[in-house]
Every structure is written in structure tokens, then in C-alpha cells.
Length: 614
Image (cartoon, rainbow, N blue to C red; front, side):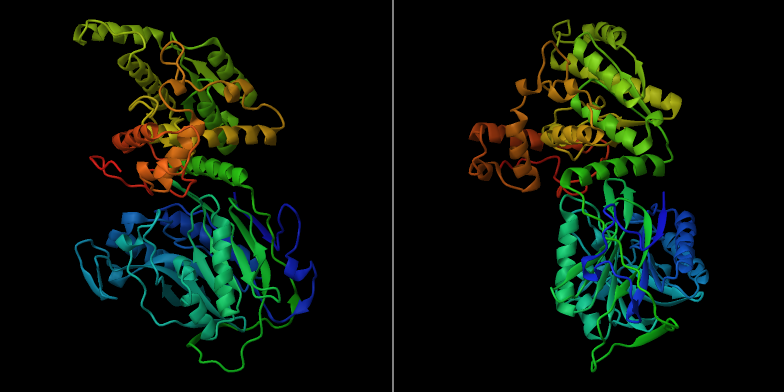
């Protein structure tokens, strides 16, 4: 849902400290609209229609400039779509249509620019800073108004770390820097990574005459990222002495969630200060005024393209929103919810199902799904076996009652017995031992078959419940509990699963997730009396080892020097070995929402065949 407001404030209702809540008459302002836009990758027509509607709304609210994020028209990241010349041509046509619909409000929008709409992978583009590029496409932003495109800017600094792979898809920009005069104010325009470079394009534009610099972004969430962004932009403002407007994308795209949180940092007597901040995880349009410092008297100026004249008279000052940053658990929860909602809906589905066992993992995924899609769109399937405990069934039933979801019971015993009988002639000792690995995996795979059959019948999308700790050590069954379309908590460590469960119950003010699910010992219940800690170290020991190995890239020997309580060298070596040999499983499991600094898949890419044992 898109919300619009003129000077919409945050939940706290507080105005920016720099303005003291005042409403004054001033001519030294620029009225901007920040659109936290939720683009759909590849939906050129849909993105165009919604972006044009945003521009019209901003114009009606009196904005001088409306800012749409990075790759608004294509969606971000477009990945290998940009290698298709037809895609680049179609997105350029969308830009022309977008520009033709603009009026006096200047629209700044992200798109993919192409050299003669090129992009064929077999065409070598050479001699760009001494590097050969196989693509003639730029990550670009256009400045549009009065029915035309006044200019474009190509992203100069291409990120190629963490989840970013832009050197594969884009050429770095090499245009001369230029300014645009909007409402009597010279503005500079940059793209995402350009603002992370000390003495880079942001500062250079300010030295060349910009009185404000606009930076459009497609910056995905990870824990602590909002503070990092604001600290980086404060450094740019310290260098440049002009306000910098940071406008970010919002919404889920495969593993990534873009969290919005757009903001403005301005130079003040107390140093660079955040003077406006939009809410995170919400698609919105915020319209407010940015106060400008005085223009320097003498300066070697960049060329300026005149776009629109200054407003006729001083206007009542509209302060920006000042959303209060969310706490770590709250922002992770919002990320997980938005990740599920957008993956399901953007994939063309409306309803989901998952196996509910009474355990904390499936209970937490159910809670996320209910918050994301509504209880009426979530179906919990209980699939008890001969080993299922009474409390697991009762906890799963209580979960369904608490969350008011549809639950169905499909016992697996008839299929379990039939499969065991079928396989007896083909096993070494003439029988399948109760609770052995073959028996355990057989049960898990039967449950996967049931979920996929129900999904086929009802056009549901299957959510899987595996957490990051289990995925790391391969404590899962291929084509069993990993069977599905989306892994909601794939990047959540087991201890964090419990923390999120307790946090969500605190928000509900009641045990919405049953206390039994939160408090009992974790178990797959695939053999009598089974508990996770019979196969793995306690999660209080396991998770720190895994974090050090997976996220911090320590070797087993280095982890031994960290002094993790309860660990020993043999245990550490065994855990690291389990991570290494489970890579083949992780390559075959569904994508899931990224919340940490290094998620499996897009972030951490290790060879499957790998004999290094560090």
C-alpha cells in the first residue's frame, strides 16, 4: 500500500531537531518529495504506471522535485536482464513515456541506459579506466520535467561486494559532472555507491556549485545498515557543506529486502545532522522542505542546465518527517515480513502453506506469514508420525487457534508403512531400522510430498521452516523439510529464532506463539526421544562457532583462539567440517530473506567440491 502525506511525521510526531517544530516563511528552501518506491523487477509497464502516478501526486502537493529510487523503471537488481538489448530498449521507451508525462515538478528517476540499446554478452566494450567490459549498459538516473529528459547521469562507482555484482552488469559512468537549476537552486544528482566515496562525486558536485546533492539508492537491509548509511552521508556533508538527500528503494526482491529509511543530512552549527528521516519498510511519498545554506560567492562552477524557475513567493516551511529508528529485533521482523509478502505476491500467489510441528521454527514462520499475508491466507498442515509427541500435536493445534489460521491434519503413518514395506527387499539387512537415517529422511520426504501436493491442488506457495544454524551444518533433509518455494528464516540463527519469538509475543501482549513451542527442547521428532543436542552442540555453543566461520571467515584454528565457552578444538573442527560438506544441500534449497551481513547464496559463495580444511 502506498501512503502520501505533506510533511508526514513519524510515529512519535516529532519534528526535526534542527527546525524546533517551527513554521516560518523562507525563500531558501527546496520542496522535495521522496518516493520510497516498491518496484517489481522486469515489470516495465507496471513500474511506469505507478511511477507516473507518484509524480502526479507530488506535483499536486507542490513539490519542486520528486525523487524516485535507483532502477525504479526496471526494478533492482535486474541482474542478467540487462544483457538483453530488447530489455534495455523497452526500458528506455518506458523512460521516454515517463518523461512525456511530467510537468513543472522535476522528476528524478532511476533506469538502465544503453549505448544504442546494447547489452549483448558477446560484445566487448573496451577501454573504460583500463578495464574491459562486456556490457554497454549503465546504471543511470534521468532528470525529467515539462515533458522531456533534461539530462542523465551514469553511476560512476559500481559495488562488487556482498550481494552486489554490478561489474558483471554495468559499465562505470565517465560523463563530466553537471548541475541542474530547479526552483532557483543548483542541484547535483548521484547514484548509490557514489555517495560512499570520500571526496567523490557528492563532494565534487558541491565544490562545483551544487547547493544540495540528491543520491538515489537501492540499498538492501542487513542488521545495523541504517546507522551505517547515515554515518557515511554525514561524512559527505562534512566534506561538502551542503545537504545530501538519500532516497532509498523499499520492498522485497528474491533474497533481498530494501528497507526505505530515506533521510536528509544537513550542515548545522552542531555538525552534519539528520534533519529528516522517512519510515522504514513502508512504501510512501513524503513531501517537505529542505533548508539550504547560502551559496558561495566565488566558485569554479560545473555547467548548469536550467530546468524550472524559482517559486514565485516565499512559502510556509514544511518540516520533514523524523521517524524513530526501529530496534534490532523490530527491524529484523519487519524485514522477514516484507520479504515473505513481496516474494509471494510478486510471484503471483496470495496464499501459502507450511508444515506445522509445534516446534519454534515452524511456529515463527507461521507468525511471519500471518503478519505478511493475513491469517486467512495461511494454511498449517499437521503431519504427525508414529514418533510425534502429544505436546507437539497440541502445540501445533494451539498455534492454529491462536493465529486463527486454517489447519489440516494429514498423518504420514500409512505412507510411511507402505514405503518401508516397498523398500525392504532393497536394503542391505532386509529391514529399515526404526529411527535410522533412512527412516528419518523417509518421513521428512513424505511430508514434503504432501505439502507440494496440497500446494499444487490449491495453488498455494510452500514456505519452508529451516533456520541458518540448521542450514549451516546440513541438519535438514533434501526434498523433505527443504522442499518448497521460500525459506522465510533461512538467514536467522537458531538463538535469534527464539529471541524473535519472545519479541513477537511481547508485541502481542500474550503467548501468541505457544509457550510450549518456545520452551521445549528442539527436536526433529523423527525417532523416539530425539533432540537436536544429541547430534549437535547446544545452540549456545554452536551459533557462535558458526557465526565466526560463516560470517567472519575465520578458520577452525582461529576460532579455537576466540575462547567460545563450551567449545574445544575437536568440536570446532567437526562443526566447520559439517558446514563444508553441506554446501551441496544449500545449493538446492529455496531462497530466503537476507538479514545478516553474510547470507548463504548471494553473499557466501563456496565451492561444493572443496578439500580445504583450515
